[in-house]
Image (cartoon, rainbow, N blue to C red):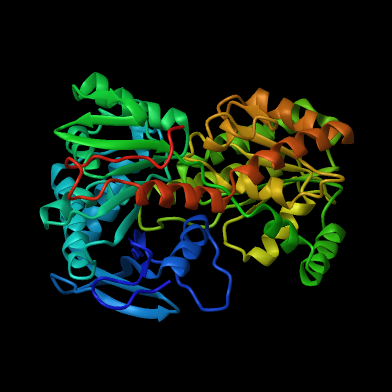
Amino acid sequence: MGRSGAAGDRMGNVAVSRLVVVSNRVAPITEGEPTTGGLAAGVMDALKEKGGIWFGWSGEVSAGAESLPNPERTVGAITLYTVDLSRRDYDEFYRGFANGALWPALHYQIGLSRFDWTEFAGYRRVNTLFAQSLAKLVRDDDMIWAHDYHLLCLAEALRAEGKTNRIGLFLHTPFPAPQVLMTVPAHEELVRAMCHYDLLGFQTETDRTAFADYIVRWAGGDALEGRRLRAFGRTVHAEVYPIGVHVEEIRAQTETPTNRRTATRMRASLLDNLILSVDRLDYSKGLRQRFGSFGRFLQDYPTWHGNVTFMQIAPPSRADIQTYREIRRELEAEAGRINGRFAEVDWVPLRYLNKSFPRNVLMPLYAEAQIGLVTPLRDGMNLVAKEYAAAQDPEDPGVLVLSQFAGAASELDAALLVNPYDEAGIAAALDRGLAMPREERCERHAAMLAVMRRNNLDTWRDRFVADLTERLSPSHAEPGLATPASTR
C-alpha cells in the first residue's frame, strides 16, 4: 500500500509506514512476472503491500568518484533505486573486504580469509555511501530492512546521518563462533556497528547464539529478557527467522504441461537413478569434497555402476576473484579423473555443468532426481535443499542427503544428514538413499514438508516485518531498544 503526503495514510490512529529494503544488489522485477531467488521473492510481497523502496548497487562500476541514487524504475507501489560504485569502491568493498575477508570467515574458511585495513575502510565507506544516498530518500516513519553481510555497518552510518528509523538486518549467511569471527581483525568494529540495528535476524539458533556469545563473553555486554542484548551503549533484539520457500508453488511448477514435457525428455536421456546437486560455484559449497565422495561411492559400491548418474550444476560465481577461478579448474580436473576411471562406452557417471539454467529446467530436474545431494561445508540456510524436497512427488519421493552444517539441517532432520568432510559417510548415505524403501522415503518426505509448510517464505517475511514494526517509537525508546512482537 502506498502513501500520500508527508504524514502518510492512516488506519485508525496507526500510520502506515513504507518499507525500505536495502541489499547489495537490486533484483530485476517486471510487473506480472514471478520473481526468483529467496531474497527477491521474500521481500516483494511485503513491498507490494506497504509500498516503498528497494535500494542497492546497480552492478555498474563507474569512472566517477560519487554516484547519486538513480530511480531505476517504478513497478506498482515499488520504486527501485540504485547507485554505481567507483572502481576503488568495488575493489575494496566488494572484491576486497566483503568477499575476500568477511565471506570466508562467516563460512569458517579462515584459511582463505585475507584482511587489509584499507579494504575494511572501503567497506565502511560504501556502507556510508549507501546511508547518505538513503538519507535523501527515506521518511521519518519508514522501516528499513537491510540484507546480508555487505551491510553490517549500514545502521551505524544511518544513525550518523541522524536517522532514528526502525532498522533491521537479516543475515543470510551463517554467523560464526566468536573465536572464528575474531580472526577478522576488525571484528569489534563490525559487532559494534551491528548493535546500531534495532533488530538482527539470523537463520538458526546456532547463529544467534554465536552472536550473543560474542556480546556477553567478548564485548562485556549483557543478555536481557526477550532476546535483547546490550553492548556498546546500545540494545538490540536478536531473533531467529529461518528463510523458507513456497512449497505448493514449487510443486505446482513441476506439474505444468511444459515442465512435464521437459521431465519426459529428461527421463528418456537419463539413467534410472539421478543424483542431483545445484550450487553456485563457491568454496563454501563443498564441491571438491562432494566430487571426492562420489568417486568413493563408485569405488565402494560397484553394483551401481551403469545405473546412476551424478549431475552437478554449478553456475560461475565471482569470476574476477582468483580463488573462484582455481575452484573451477580443480573441479574440471576432478570430473575428468572420475569419468576417466569409471566411465564405460555407454555410461558417463558424472555430468558437470558449469552454467546456469532457468527454473523451468531446474524444477523438472529436482522432481526427477532420486537423490538431492546438498553438502555445503557451511551455509546460512540453503534453499536448494528445500526446493528439492518441495519438488518431489509425495507418493514416490526422492531422498535428500544434506550436510549437517547447512542451516536447513536444523529443520530438515528427516533428511540423511552427513558430514561434508566424510567421503565414506557420504558414499554410504548415497547407497542407502538409492536403496531406501518407498515407505521410508514417504515418511521422511512428509516430515520435511510439514516443517517447510510451517516455516515457509511468507512466515519468514511476516515475522521479521512484524517484529520490526513493533519496536518502540524512537521518541519513547532508549537508543537502539527493540521490543519484539512476541517472545519466543
